[in-house]
Length: 304
Image (tube, rainbow, N blue to C red):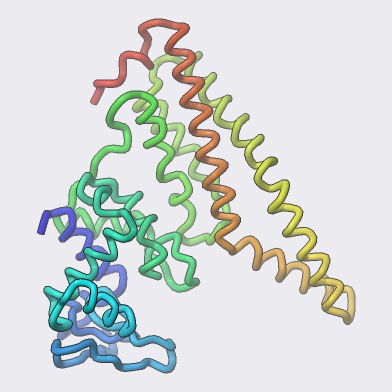
């Protein structure tokens, strides 16, 4: 198996807490709910163990915590004969392929691959399942220690570099503070952008950055025109239906707002806003390049 793929699988096993279980077969025979202090293991790879954990409402098992019903589907699809480590790896690779993450893994685009897989593994940052999530920095450390390699986000032509610089922007604050401070990574984004794309053309850098923020503000207004209205109307409805005292009505409205803010819709709004802003900044950079001839921007396509 290519090195990056194996490193990514090792990172997943660490993230899911299976490879760190004492006495396990590198995580391959771990049941859900296991902890280092209380290992829960199964003892045959002939089939998925199909042990239901009532506390967690789950049959997840193995190195990558696969549910029994998904094992049945992949067993038929891939023709795997058992639940052995080889079969578990094959199924995990298939899952990565289904999330279109293999190309990112093979080329070392770790942030992008993790984000694409966060709907499968609850321990990854950005996962919608409300469980404990590991930070991107910790995952990257494990991935690198396992022999994985990273590709700079700033390779290629300037426009590609700018898009790459923004590719992990949402991810920077999606671990730890769910859906809060989504744009707190902007400062680091522009520090990277300055160092890797625009330096030392101060005037053009200012134009690109101003365009980014202007477009972001406009996009937020466009996006939240619908989403914002829904949040407000849902909150009012919740307050009206709550009855009781004013404090109870307020609590119902706050709960409604919190629920809406934690949905994928708001994440999509933020992602769409960032995408719009990045594309506008790319257009501004290309315009500056066309007007200014050879500059720090136009000449940086082959820079390291």
